[in-house]
Each structure stands twice: as C-alpha cells, then as structure tokens.
Length: 230
Image (tube, rainbow, N blue to C red; front, side, top):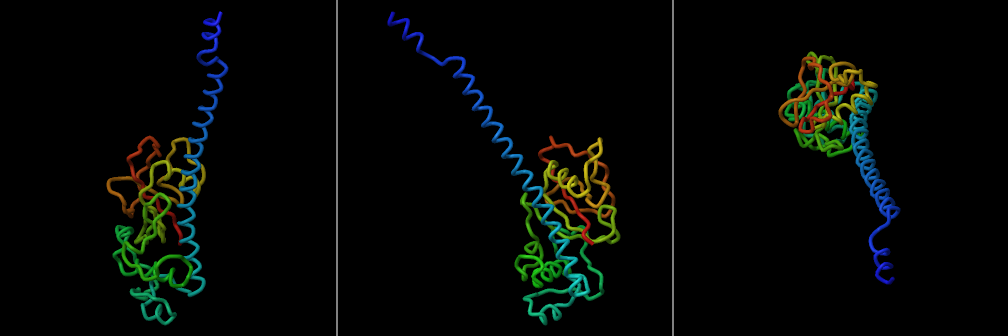
C-alpha cells in the first residue's frame, strides 16, 4: 500500500503541466510585446528627431528671416554664439547631397551651429563636420541634404536618417506618408523618400529611387530615408 501511494505522488499532474505551459506562454508573449514596444519607440523617436529639425529650421527662418547655415561667422559671433564656421550669404543653403553624412561642406557645419547657437536645437554649437551630426534612436546619423536640383527626386531641403533596418524604414514611411499600398512599396513617392544599398551610412542621391518593397526579412540591409523639411 505504501509503495502505491508513493508512485501516485511522484511526478506532475496534467493540470500542473498545463499551468506551467500557460505561464511560459504568457512570459513569451510579454517578451515579444516588450521588444515590439521598444522597436516602436525607436521608430517614433527617429520621426520626432526629424520633425524637431524641421521645426527648428522653420523657426530660424521665422526669427532671422534667412535660412540657417547661410550667414557669415561674423553674424553669428555678433549674436554671441560660439560659432567657428559660416556660410557665403547667397540666401541659398548649399549642402551637397553626397556629403549628407560626411558634412564636409562649410554650410553643412554652419547649419548645425546656427540652429544650436540660436537655442532652437540642442547640442554642441561648436561641433563641425561629422561630429556635428546628431544620432537617432537606432544609432544612425541624421544629416541635412539640399536638392540641387533634387533629393530622391524632390526639390527642397531634407532631414535624412541613416542606418535603418527595413522594418524601421517602412514604419517611418507609414508614419509620415500614411499606409503603404498592397505592393508594400512607398520609398519613391510622397514626402518621405528612401533607398537601400551598400555602405552605412548610405548617402542619399539626386534621382528618384527605384521602387522597392519593404522586405522585413532582409535583416542585413541598411536604409537611408529623407523627409522634406523646407
């Protein structure tokens, strides 16, 4: 009798196993949802970063009646800003598309110094060249490109983000331009344009990018997206 009681008490019952499996399932769901929330937070922060630059750019024009980055160093220093580089005063911002993330052009560095010196954007107002470029939530760079004549087929001034995954690029496209079509292609239309290719950071180009579906399984692909800010 004692042996039978011991056998009956050993091991787990089906109910106990079921409870354990339910707990494991809930933990897995929680982890996956947590990862998705982190990814969504990153995406929204990148969009917010680009829109902050847009707001700072337009705020500068409203306050000083000229584009940031085009004024001379003497103008900046007269305002009490610790600027070391300025523009040529032509009234047109000149930042080569290919140099968006190297920021070697004088007016590229001047652009960031003007926005930071004016207090419209946070960061070191003395930083120049690549060191002046902010990093976004996915650890890529944010640069500014000027259409001469276009950036990804659109004229104007753009804030561009590099080093994005396909999933992040698609999410940013959806936030800025709305839902993607059934083809899942939206990189060559609207105010948000983007492309993928070799190299990180990948500089934007002048021409309209070829239509590419956002294939989220392509985990090793880096995207650059550009949003028109002016």
